[in-house]
Picture 1 (cartoon, rainbow, N blue to C red):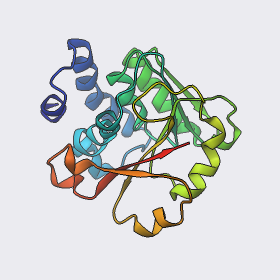
Picture 2: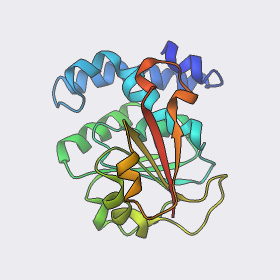
Picture 3: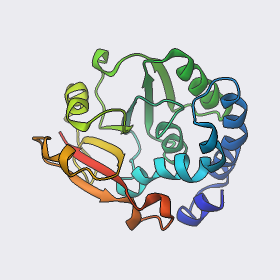
Length: 206
C-alpha cells in the first residue's frame, strides 16, 4: 500500500480501503484458482496493482467513460482502474471462466458497482467503449484487429479514443508491423522502481 500512496496521494479513504483489501482477497482466491503466479503474489502491489495504474498516469478516465479490459485474467488492469475511477464503467472479459468467476468475486467483495465481468472472447463483443485496455495478451497488431470495431466515436478525453496497452521489453519490431499511429509512454517516467524500467503503455488512437 505504501507504493500506491506514494504515487497516488490524493486517494479517498474508500479507495485506500479497497486497495488495502486487495492483498487478502487475492491471497485467498489465488490459493483456490491460480490467477497470479505464486512468486508474484508477494509483489502484488508493484507488479499488478501499480503496473495497472500506469494507465491512470497516462490517461485519467472522466466520469461516464466506458472501458473494456480484454484478457483481464485475475482482473488486471481493470479492477485497480475501477477503484481509481469509480465514475467510469469497466467491462472485464476473459475466455477462461474460472478466472472470470474470481474477478467477479473480488469485484463483489470490494463493492465495485462499476465492474461487469464476463466470459467472452473480445471478437464476439458488439458494445462500444471510449478505451480498450489490456496487459500484453498478444502482439498488438492482431489485438487492434479484434477490438477496433468496439471503439466509440464519442471522444471526450485529452487522448482520442483507442487502445491503452501495457507491454514490456523491446517493442521496436512489434510496433513496426503496426500500420496505425501509436505513441509509447515509458512507465519509468512515472514510477522509479526497477520493475518499471522496461514497462510501457502503448497508446493506439482508433
